[in-house]
Amino acid sequence: MAASAQIRFRPASANDVEAAVPLIYSSGPAAFDYVFAVPGRSDAQAFLRHAFVDGAGEFGWRNHCVGEFDGQVVVAGAGFGAETHWPFTLAAARQILGYYGLRHALGVMTRGLRVESVIPPPSGDMHYLAHLGVAPTLRGQGIGRALINYLVAAARRQGRERMVLDVAVSNPRAEALYARCGFTVTGERLSELSNAQGSVPGHRRMERWSG
Image (cartoon, rainbow, N blue to C red):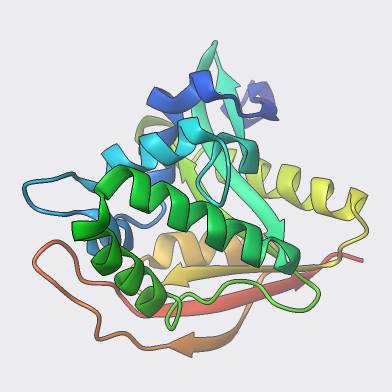
């Protein structure tokens, strides 16, 4: 039986932090490092663990689902709409201030806003799929497609039909997967964002109608 057929999806919990955060991070390591890595203070995954356990906002466990294979979390992702913008923004500000302190928080927030020029949050009727990550040893076995199907089905139960995601131009394998799942490229944003911790690649926006 294919691994994808044996995945059991469920809402994430705070207890999933050690397995889920590396998967979330793998969905965009360069962007996460650019924003959240602060030399001498923290790497990106340490902040993501803090935010995940907190539960609120874009990076909190309440915003994620996970999939288990043989009792282990091997896939994670999130889906959300434009109505989350301000709650997510306020949660992120609180988490960043609480974790980094005032000295570093302003820089982290500024870099996060810059990344939104390349990977903008959802607007209008979009249902945005994000933080899609599969364990490296299980890639290429249909698990990414199963995750997308799970997230799309959840969105449709909310009455949403316009699915949107962003993919780095440096990740053609992921773009090919999304194309096989019915997504088409609708635009591309270039990026010149770079620091000593990470260089954010350009991203392509892809959309799918699921009526």
